[in-house]
Image (tube, rainbow, N blue to C red; front, side):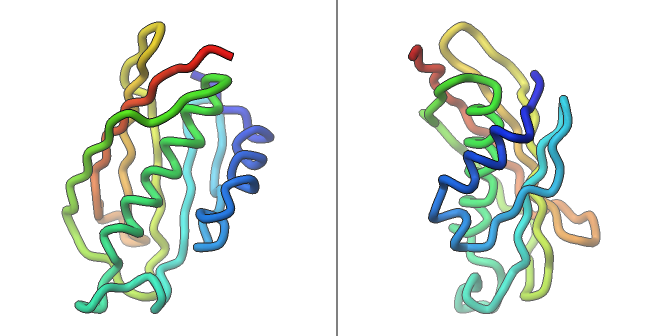
Length: 133
């Protein structure tokens, strides 16, 4: 697995929804891809914590960027998330993704979303279908 920074950045630019919410590319290396966003008031739920849908979106964005950097075209077919700690306004959430398995048609990735203090907010597993061009 080698993530291509230029492709990752181009994919995020083309993802209007993720870009509009403030998701940014933090790090791209051969074996590491990290995206992040700063939690704002508009991202909170009625408990004044980060909305679970936003945390899921951040993890899903990391999955999409990683899998479509690894392969020409990959689409999500399954995703699971466990929320383990809340995030608050002002926290920078970082989603770090790695590929854990792959076959000729499917690949599975693990995404960990952490706060600035290193606490894991969620653990996300996503599987993609590797489409042929």
